[in-house]
Length: 296
Image 1 (tube, rainbow, N blue to C red):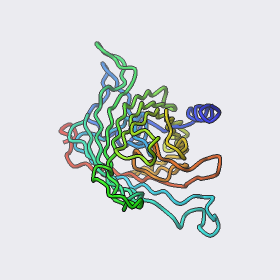
Image 2: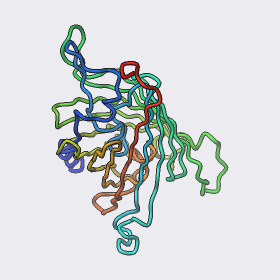
Image 3: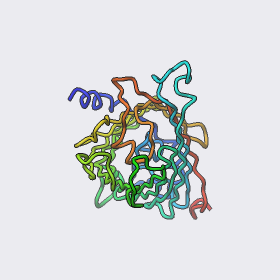
Image 4: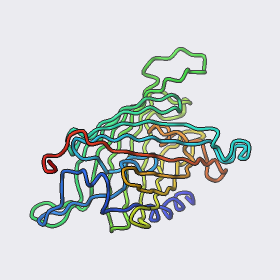
């Protein structure tokens, strides 16, 4: 219970900024006098490991590099605070239309390939006539495939390597400084480590941002689990986002080294209490493949 209270207490301090957001500049849905849409609820499409309600504009692609170093408490001087040991993930996604995003990635942890999609359901808005949504909502799904060699000595089916993640991302931009998101989560593993472990895992993602300056913000995210797998802990990450022109840099400390969805959400062995912490960063860059007609 103390851990949960600790996580909830941290979340209001997690944040980002708004008006000069790179993704918002490329979004085809421009606020009007009649109906104003919230934009730049978060700085990027990822906060640390988890997805946000943000999406690139129509005709825009995005490339993200994620890097997690080794544990700080693992021979810190010898491994230079984990800098000698690292995992890396590459991701590319594209929006054919403003409400649909699809992409794929590859993580070095368990040599994992993944494919994912995001569908915008609602967008926070005010003003105008008709329905005005107080929240933004996005459906997120991914499938992962691990390709590392099994070490248990048994024959395995190809499907044993698959896992699936489904989330409803619900966010609200409370002010220019503060945004908050909750994400009811369902993860299904075709194969779990122990017979007592459940193949279906339920969780609740919590994340937020707090804007410090026009180009700097504090962020935080956590995943609470209903029936944790044996030997795992709540993944908790705290970060700092920086925008430098065409790039967004996200620096963070986390107890989750893995970056593939089911692994960081439900299979995090590291513990904050034991000092199992990893330094890491994400770098994102957007590319306009199809220029909007309004800009032409």
